[in-house]
Picture 1 (tube, rainbow, N blue to C red):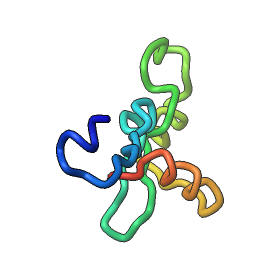
Picture 2: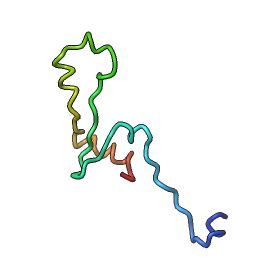
Picture 3: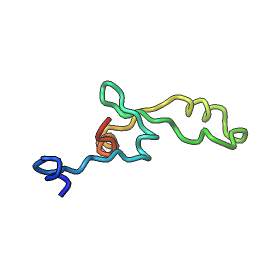
Picture 4: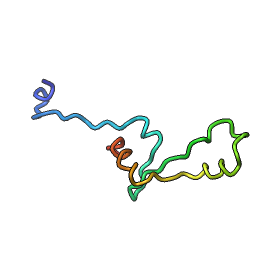
Length: 76
């Protein structure tokens, strides 16, 4: 086995970071999960100005959803 070849007792699987989650979420220093709001990519002329203005500001996930996203980002 590979582990025996390098003198290791056992090889453990690495925790993989979810590639979709790492593009969409960032963890803050305080442990909150920050994300960018949706509906800001195309067809902006027909969307209301207030809606576009509110979507400019980044937001934070609710406490219930934070645990799910943090499990997808184990190394962050």
